[in-house]
Image 1 (cartoon, helix red, strand yellow):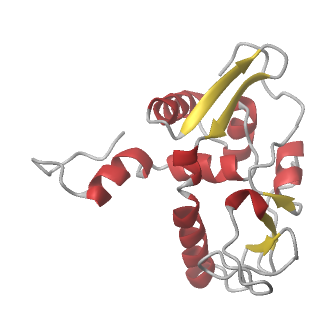
Image 2: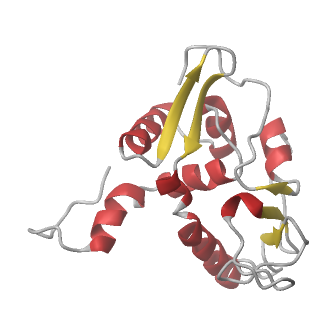
Length: 182
């Protein structure tokens, strides 16, 4: 359900942005897309989201131009972030940092590194070693000191997400849904 608008002229950029990303599951879907999740079944498995909700959210994000849907007969249906979607990384990063600061007493859940030189990234995405602002495809994310994998029923998607990897690098897990679903 989208946020009801109370702005007659819709002249508030924050309210307009929340119409797109303010729904409960949306930023988690986007986060997982950054982590390399691309398939409907993999989103469903990773997020434990009701399939009807996931279907609606994915359709909405495609319609809004945040994701594209690729119907490849060989790979099956995949969803990828568009440039508009990749533009959400600073927001996702900021929310993860806020969560780490206030809800992760053991330390950050995930650290970000510049894949080229291994330098840690600061809160603005700047490499502490070389000083560059690192573009999203060159960011490596890895478990941090506060990371604590949950659940005993491990799956290939979780295993891939929980190992050091570049953002946007697709996870090539075994299909978790029969062809045609999603």
